[in-house]
Length: 304
Image 1 (cartoon, rainbow, N blue to C red):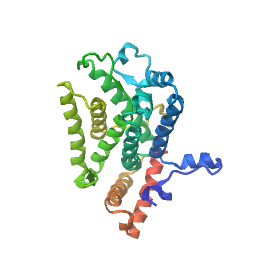
Image 2: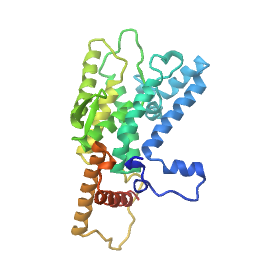
Image 3: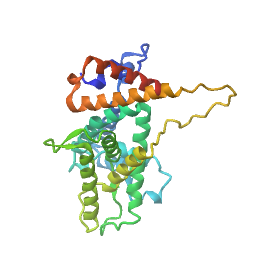
Image 4: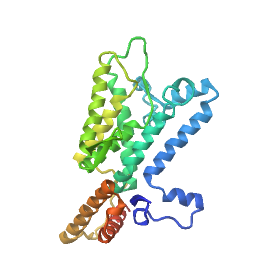
């Protein structure tokens, strides 16, 4: 069992909920997003597998395309496109299940650690905004790029804009963590991030010459830029929909020593998490496990 699955890394469950609901409640936000993508994929398959007209209609209504600004009221596309994937049926069978498989593997692999750092709710907000931003970057780019001759509309589906954001944010958070490029070559995370972004830039240059790999590189770069800004500017979206209560009561603020102790615990906890990712949970000492438990409790208190 991994460090992320242990009790001290879970949110408190609602013990009165039915078994299925309790299981869903206990899932990490990363796993919930993976499941949501898979469920949408299966539903699209069930609806469009045997009917080409229905299949085409699904993508016409839910995908994002280069003509978005001719019907901007269809704003749901900015999100739904991020939960759609190239189908294993109909006219999209050239990619099949590999499209969703690679995206979900990347989301699960890196999302767990980003979620652990920011909390489930903040991670969810970050991910949805990353999808929206990458979708917008995709459609905006076609105001500056000429479409291939004879192609009136270019369409995009997939979670890759959000997944790239998660991967790049991970690279900022844990730049010295070793990752296996092509499952073989160990490199620091920050180097892997540069290679990832560099490849998308290369695809962009290639597309300017009329060659296309069928990859929405604009959405990838938009997602990467969003993650960089989020990290560098210290954005947090946890205050959405909240208003500060009007009160004359003096609100207690932690004293500097308390703040310093909390920050030291956070720093130690993050270093331990990086050690787990690099060398495995078995490398932890009893003292490190206790520190990680206190770190997890502190982070859960901050999420509430």
